Image (cartoon, rainbow, N blue to C red; front, side, top):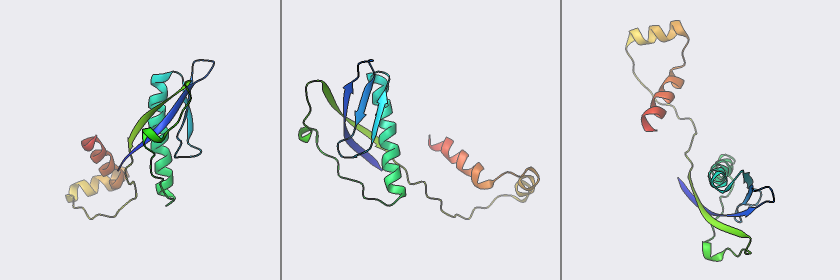
Amino acid sequence: MEYVYPAIFYKNKDGSYSITFPDLPGCISEGKNLGNALNIAQSALKQWIGYLADKKLEIPIASSLEDIKISNDKLVNLICTNVKNAKAVKRTVSIPKWMDDKVALTGLSLSKVLQDALSEKFA
């Protein structure tokens, strides 16, 4: 699912940028420079929303940019991320007997192999 939230960036004395999300109290991060901070903000948002979803906590509604009031030394930008439901589900799959024999000999996890192959296919 796609999530878009405003983030506030402010430059620190050392040139790094601190990041806060007004709608997500406690979701705070920092980047070495503005470009890095934008990437870090996306990662922080993804982890925060993922945590809320995993814990079945309410995911707050995002404010609009117009509702965010900031001082001249700060900037606000929308940050977008996709959070996928990683909950495991059981599926029945069929493989040839010779493959099953090889799997038993090597100790591979069929679930892991399938997840890796599908992750690569959908990347």
